[in-house]
Image 1: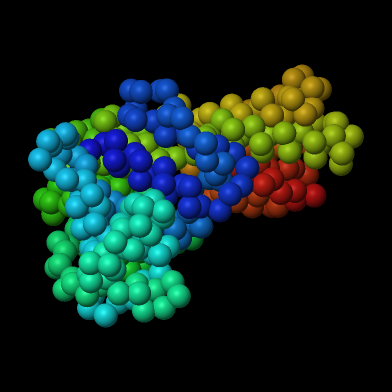
Image 2: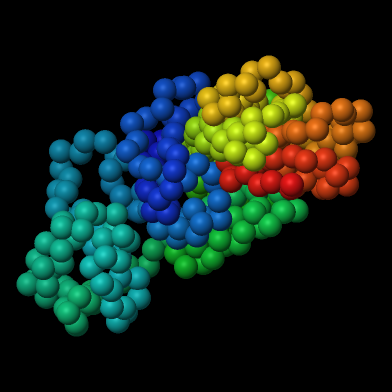
Length: 373
């Protein structure tokens, strides 16, 4: 399956997600920093609701393998026959009745083209219309190959990670795809071992969600040498299709809200900005915190004079709690805002502030800020 097709279907997945503020950026590879043109307005996080649309995305991936588009220009290939075969392949079991929308989704063809092909196939006796908007194939369904999808999860200690894994399992089952899921446990060593395991399992496509930028080239090389296409979530990997948020825009939104909140509730009085970072993830996720700072200064110009503290929470609850806790014991600031790289870091900071009884406001990565005051 070509990288262009994988990229196309990743963007398709995002377009099915619920619309919200923010934008989508897809980079062709870690070395290509020019975002592709994308008109979709999508959520600026990688939340569970996006994974809930994974069934459509996985279906599109299967169609990429079934499609002949990646063969290049074949002068003997009749595209209309190829498209018709894709329509018939949408019916996966004898007697299955599908509405037009489902046929178009499974075939990966435009709705208007699907309608015309169904109409033509009905006239040829290969499809029956069994309802106002229901179609049934009269041709015995072709037994399709069972595709193998490898998914290396970032971790399963937190609810978000568990929901992502569970949604992929549901989608794979629904689409008839074999899913091999492993847990990277936020560990660079385990991520490399898991990549080796998925290569040995000969998966058709790998979805990699691991945090360390330093081992990204190593992990990517394992799949590339095995000829396995790869999608990298959140952290760019060389040669892989990148799937993630517009980190800077996400931080900018949170930062602007922080500044407005301080202006309205603390009368523009701000002593300190704490940024909870995840250095090992690299520069791209760090753009979230850059956006937070810019957003705060845009909404609250007086914040340019306040103290800025950078703390390494490692993107985890425990380390974030401990590092903020130690900082607060030496602190004299009264009014503090926190920009965190992700939700669990913000929750760790929240617990530390609750323990110390210090007023604060948090921007949890790309999520809405919350006040503990």
